[in-house]
Image 1 (cartoon, rainbow over the protein chains, first blue to last red):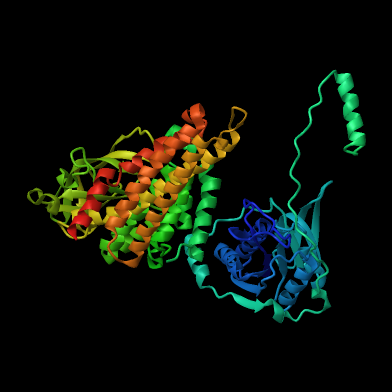
Image 2 (tube, rainbow over the protein chains, first blue to last red):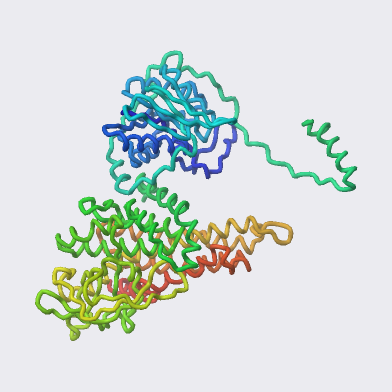
Length: 260
Length: 380
């Protein structure tokens, strides 16, 4: 079975993000970049499937700047076999559909049965790439998956997905795409010998400019400005008789906060 | 001059930190309280390759550099200093001398299991009358046919009761003193090898520290490491490497102290504001940060020097001396920042305080480190 996993190189979730003075992006200096945590679930799941179904292969595809190799090598050290790195300096691309078009241009030429993506990247939280990629490739997708079974004949999958109201169980023929949600698995630690072996694995690099994207690759989103979230203001304490205070609160909610 | 870590070193640092956060920190306090050995975590570290980091791939190790090793010991010790010393001893004091002095048969027999954490190693030099004066060893080994017969008592052996293989130093010729010492690989279950008293320690309580008793213990000649009379040299060379591990352990403890102090000083309010806004606290934090960085750089420099393949005794002694002192000072200051709460077991700094002290004592006291440094200055 051929498995493709899409991985994004994102700032560590413990990083303190600061906006550049001119509002054109975030300050990347001093930030530590890691594999997007939801993509780690995707990689782990693909490796587990590979371990269950003999003859399987896991290919990691990443779009990112040159130093995204660190995240790619982490995936290789976890157990992925091969990697394609679309080298793109403009990593602050907040256009999920254009990203999906780029991924589709790479993945359409790969042999694949199942594509696994994280349900979203923790930097822009758009959650668009997986479903849009499935659309470009003309295959079905199941998003926000917490449990995944591949049939023994590797022809279909059964996936469990969490929705707000219920838990859905979906059966789907292959090839297909799923997006991984927390709870799907517990990613392994890469072993030290595997880290050293991953160092020697050749990563295929493709300059973003050479992908030959059609109109699908044209950006649809223009980022106008980045800004820090407003600082939380101190709360106000109302004092007095409960009857009076409740009246005051209701008045404030209607007139000042305008939430009622 | 390059201060950035290489890509694989950064990956190892992140893996070790991740492991420490998820597996070690949550259990460190309980294991300390109960003085129970972290069997499960040592096994997991072995499976990941942390127990024999510098052992080459052909013997089942990760074939890594000493810099990677120092980084990993720091991160593991930042989560649990007891686990840090168990890891350091297995790597530096057992795998390394077997690699350096072992016969091809000994390497093949011992290294793969030690490197994968299937077996655990201990290093046994200290005796009641032979601490810093390691040449004064009373344990004897007498050749009788194909075996050496060993008699004596060893103390303060890290992982002693848990070890499958003990690198033991005994005298094969008392008239020669230090030059009459010989090293042996004693295996668990050999006749006449007994575990004595388990020590009840101030700190690093989750690590095992035991007495080992040898009563007419028969050890095959094939288990001698190096040649007769090479024991003292093997011990001293091995301890040079061990000091990098203990320096890294001390840096890990000091880093944990610094982080705990910064966090608490932002949360704790007195006189209507967080105590981190008082200069008295800021000075302590600033001094800690400088010393932790200096200790880390001395440690990485010693590891880097070892990786270059040149003599590194002075660098290792400097790193161990300064890093252990830094761990103790950082722990004192971290408790001080916490005030009364820092004296209570509910806070990790109470454990760091007890864990830090041993780094100034084992694998050569701070006084011995100064002797090593001075000797290398005066030799020139």
